[in-house]
Length: 167
Image 1: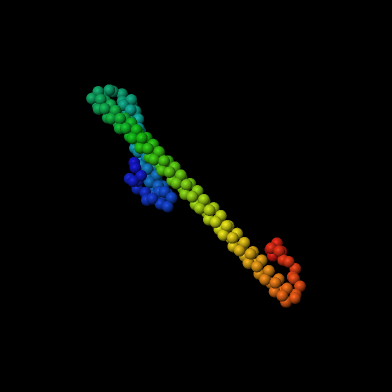
Image 2: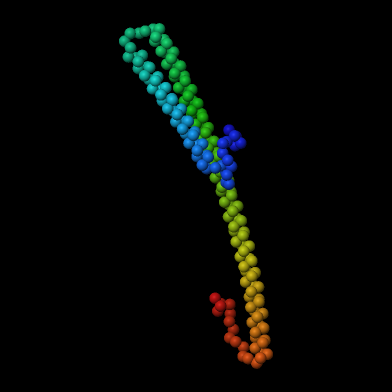
């Protein structure tokens, strides 16, 4: 079964989980129904064998027909078992492969998002550092200007305030 034949819509990070769950539920139901049919046929075979064993008198003609029916029922049960095992195994293998692809895609997407977030945070840190440095330069220039104005006015210089005192 190819991905283009799957009855699922492609979602943001792979197939729609609800659709995959619904599909797997349908597969499980079909598998259970086939197992029920097999069990019913096995019971029918056992019952027919018991009926044959319980008969006191051999009825050759009827016995041959029952043996033929029993043989056909056994063949059909074996074929149903084989088909159910093959189909069920393939469905489970396909579902596991799809789940692995979905997990891999989600993991890759998460890694890309994490790297983008880290890069954005680093860029913003750089911008904030540059802004802080610009503000520090502006403050230093303003402090020099105030000191020059005080000197020009004949006032004593104020006590130095450092960046550590401001915080």
